[in-house]
Amino acid sequence: MPPSLTLPFLRYHQIPIPSPFHLTRCSATTTTTAAVSQSESTRRKTMDRLAENARLMIVSDLDHTMVDHHDAENLSILRFNALWEANYRDNSLLVFSTGRSPTLYKELRKEKPMLTPDITIMSVGTEITYGNSMVPDDGWVEVLNQNWDRNIVSEEAKKFTELTLQSETEQRPHKISFYVQKDKAEDIMKSLSTRLKERGLDAKIIYSGGMDLDILPQGAGKGQALAYLHKKFKAEGKLPKNTLVCGDSGNDAELFTIPDVYGVMVSNAQEELLQWHAANAKDNPKIIHATERCAAGIIQAIGHFNLGPSTSPRDVMDLSDTKMENFDPAYEVVKFYMFYERWRRGEVQNSELYLANLKSVCCSSGSFVHPTGIEQPLHDCVNSLRTCYGDKQGKQFRVWVDQVLPAQIGSDSWLVQFKKWEQSGEEKQSCVATAVLSSKDVTVAEGLTWVHVHQTWLNGGGQNGQTTWLF
Image 1 (cartoon, rainbow, N blue to C red):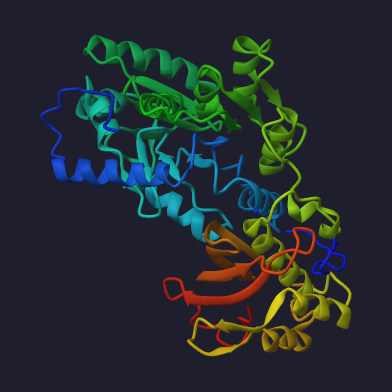
Image 2 (tube, rainbow, N blue to C red):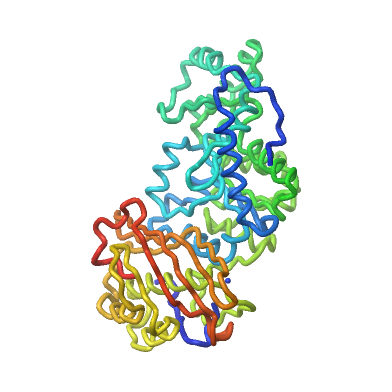
């Protein structure tokens, strides 16, 4: 059984540029100035929410790195989620760098409890997008258009019968993807590279996952995409203080070559990446091979390199022992919904003391607006928990929060915006939430008071949850 929260709400408990690449546009490019402006505006919005240079930028692969497909309960990624939202979201940058196309990336988001990244790098570093709306970086498109001819690549690749074209969704403007048997990959890569050079193309061929072969422009790849981002940030004086790259396969190797980054190969890293490391970076103290799988290995690396807090709130049995120097509304939100999950899973004791403690951090006149629009006192919401203790026991029920962003709106009050998700079996529900928290008449040791919570269904996410969605 996961660790429980011991009296978690006692009052002594603590609570939170223009692109530097001035290149001539390829004739095939039809991007308009307006679109470029939208791309740049969205990127600036992503950066401008940070008061200073990002404390940490994590650049992580997804499949078998951030996402463990062998973890049925998704505990590893949920541990990372809680750590990130409680300690890093408001001052750091989260970047997902995946070989998946936008189509398959969005499918994965539906399947797994993934956070929303600030930046998404897809299709093996050939597509960079920003924000929730995933606005593409058109400057990166211009870079990749240089000396790239997709038709020539297709013509030459078709001559190799050992190559099997991947699905249409994985064929992108700057990426052509195939399957190939492991024992034939090396010879085909050498021969194909020679043929492309003879046609005047210096393309990049990447083999990963024991079966995937991707052909990209020479200037593309996960590492080059990260270098491009670093250059943009540096030009604006906003280079992150630290960058941690995380991967498990061959198409992640480039990430570890970027100067001054920390790197972690998760314990389940594939042979191709370990061989690359042994040949190229075995003496680099900034790169480690974790002893933990997937997201747990990322957490391990944060602690190993002393990049910031590395204890996930999900790993703390008694959060009342946490020592805080200042009020921390993001931590308060994460803690609240962890207790809610454990209460419904029956992982804490069914005690009136818990509910009394919970009431003590809710304003007596506070209100909660349910996503259906029904408003009720916060204390009534706490009372309603009596009827649902353990109702999700033995079930795959999880609760997590995403994009927890607090803003101080007064000398003693904060407005916290976040997304709240619940998953029960295959069914997922979500809402956008706004909470007002107050430090009036309480100490840091006592924690913040919940004054108001307002929730709205996210993309119709609560069609079936009007009776089971309590908080």
